[in-house]
Length: 151
Image 1: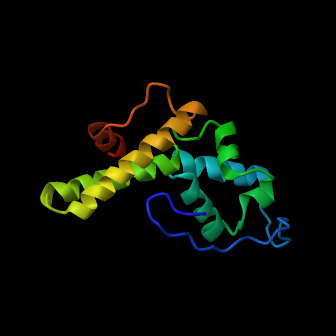
Image 2: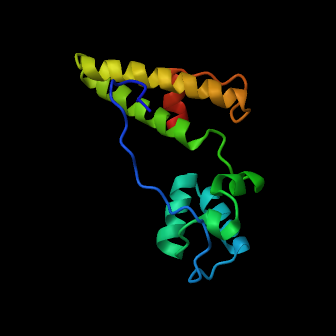
């Protein structure tokens, strides 16, 4: 499959082994996993950061193997899902950083084009999340609003 803003095809990444079974050396139960994940999420961590902390600090290689469901679904059931999805939040953070860069370097035309491409990516992703009711229906991207949301 090709990339959206370049003429290149992506390279394959690593994949987990197909049979997703719970390793016998994992001692945590599903309920312990969920309580730790909700606690970390309420502390302001994204779902990806929660998964990394569970893997590195608590020795849980995959929440899906332990609890039987994905981490995002577990957090959504407990009401700990963030208002704005993680991938959209990361794009907003990148846009704000790029806007600050362009304020000090106004002639950086390649990054100005990158900003334009990133903003269009945000608009497409926001349309997708509005259709699936993950963000409010009236949510629209604006440069000033992105700076306020990231802070």
